[in-house]
Length: 127
Image (cartoon, rainbow, N blue to C red; front, top):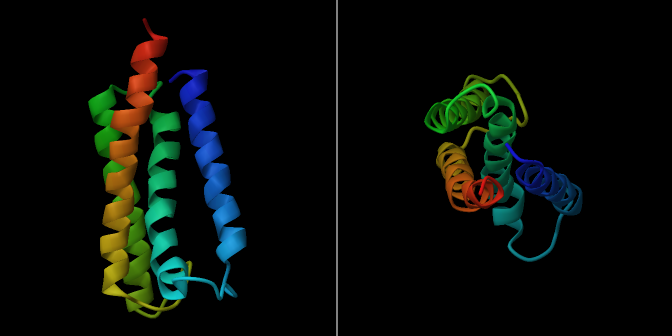
């Protein structure tokens, strides 16, 4: 993975971190329920997927790293939500089946971002 791709992923990670500080638990602005309940359930898995790619790409083929990164990311989110379902508070305490769908969307968005943006940059860098 090129330095440019890693730079994009680091900037995205910093933006996700900043979003957490801006939104936080006391956010009262526009679309409060969506921002505090679902937006983070989309951008966090997307970010986790991209960080998996930084770790996996040097060792695995594109297809394998995408598959493993996607499955691992979704399964982490699913495990968190199922823990909440059984009363074990991990990264929150309220089970919401819509969160599972948001994790799916986030992991899928990570793959799309990777294949459309990161891989385009990688192809241009390798020419």
